[in-house]
Figure 1 (cartoon, rainbow, N blue to C red):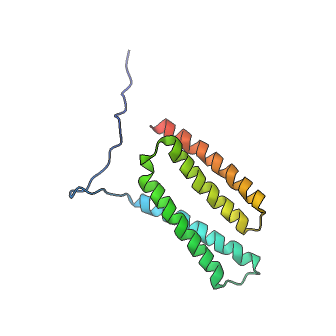
Figure 2 (cartoon, rainbow, N blue to C red):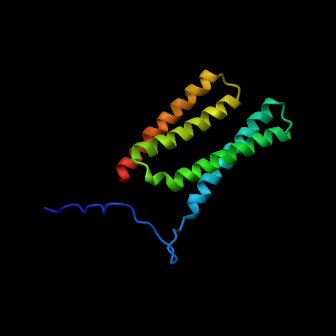
Figure 3 (cartoon, rainbow, N blue to C red):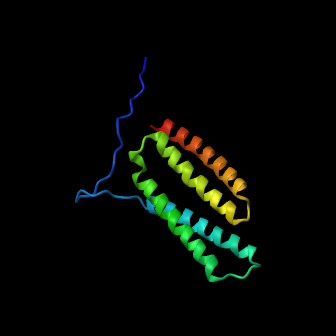
Length: 137
């Protein structure tokens, strides 16, 4: 009877010749693309509410949204491996739920509606990420 190969414990990381770590381009590009998308979405929501004329305040909200989401997403991707899979899934779900709730509130939804939609999306992504981490580890 054949036995399955066991997964080695821990994760393997690529290290640079000088002892530092290499980061894949996806580790930088994915949070940046998601942040720019959310920032443009936030600015466009405000633009369409004000009658279609773009002004500096709308772009400022979009830029701040993109910067905050990009930094939090990069930090979570960079240091999230140190968390257990349950907390890591909860962190991804919380970040996603907060982003969706914020964008819903910008669109004119009530606080209760924005909180409910953000919570539902966050719980959904938490479950999906936990399953993904559980299967992979």
